[in-house]
Amino acid sequence: MATQSAVTPGQRSTERAAISEKTLRTDRWWLLPLITFIGFSAFIVYSTWAAFANHPSQYYSDPYLSPFYSPCFVKGCPSDINWGSLDIHWRWLSPAIYILIFPLGFRATCYYYRKAYYRSFWLSPPACAVAEPHKSYTGETRFPLLVQNLHRYFWYFAVLLGGILTYDAVLAFMYKDAAGGRHFFLGVGTLLYVINAVLILGYTFGCHSCRHITAGRINNFSKHPVRYKWWSFVSWLNKHHIRWAWLSLVWIALVDLYVRLVATGHIHDYHHVFGAVSTAVGH
Image (cartoon, rainbow, N blue to C red; front, side, top):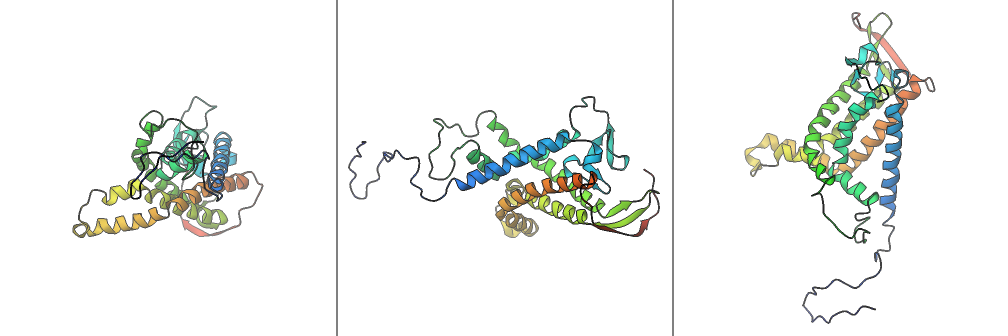
């Protein structure tokens, strides 16, 4: 049994406590890392499957386009949602891969997600006041964790994709009939897309990088009232960043699943098509 050196009252010891236990915590400290591990693993499995189940009949049902495939810019997408008609020769590679790399890069380098998967997957550490199994620690100073510094640049792509998903939510109100006429459309999927856009934007603009961009270098808020208001709003979003992160992650998978079930005929999208909004347009 290790001995402890005597310490006089008021004097701080320079030695660590001789504790052999992994932790002295008696609460269920392992529960949150476990839930995080299961949640992340489920999303990884589903998104990987969804990225390769890539036939248009599975991820597109007018006016809904799976958010995993938006924007659609390769050949094979329906003509009215195709942004570029790029001829991708690697036919085994899903077009979703080219799109998911940016939002996944943004989330993987997110400050909250770093803490979450460092604890749940790498046990570094698994929880506060719990010993970790690693004998050395280099922080984020070496590859691959050095890539975490790209988070602020992934944010710009995330803003762009957030705008595209918002555009998709607008398109979810517009239905094109066989003659090319546009009609106001309101369905269950429309509501799902609107909520998806709100959650994605809430998560993106609640990012710590956005908070720094709005007013990170300002020393006197009174001289910049407009930027201060933006900073206050972003700070409010940031306060709930964990909720935005999880809700947006789960919701975007649910929207993709919903579109696939509708496109394959497994469920029916309850909707109502109103009168024509504009004249017929070509494809």
